[in-house]
Image 1 (cartoon, rainbow, N blue to C red):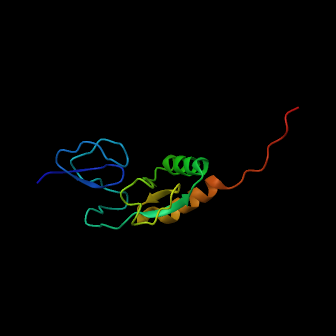
Image 2 (cartoon, rainbow, N blue to C red):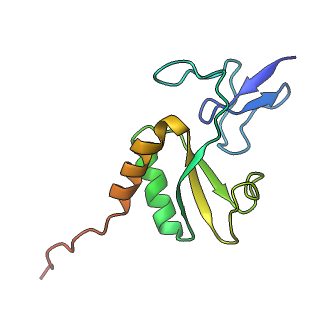
Image 3 (tube, rainbow, N blue to C red):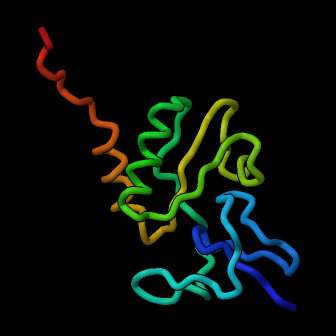
Length: 122
């Protein structure tokens, strides 16, 4: 049987699928190799590095992770994994691979730190 893979999150799809339902990117024929080695035999579940109901914070955290080149998976109540991770109504989550958790948490923390007010324009 032929399988396709998402180049962003690494999820495996049966033949016939062309786009990742979570990442909305075209699938590829070979499982992506992540920096630091081939994790093709690893089936570790993604880890939530941010949860909340603030769409502005969600977007800021997601943009910061994207800028840092960390692959993410967005999760909301309608997602198939929502019940497994106990996502509450209105809650959003950002998941990353276990290898990226420490760096991703630091990036999210920095992205969401309150910024001091700038000078007042006269």
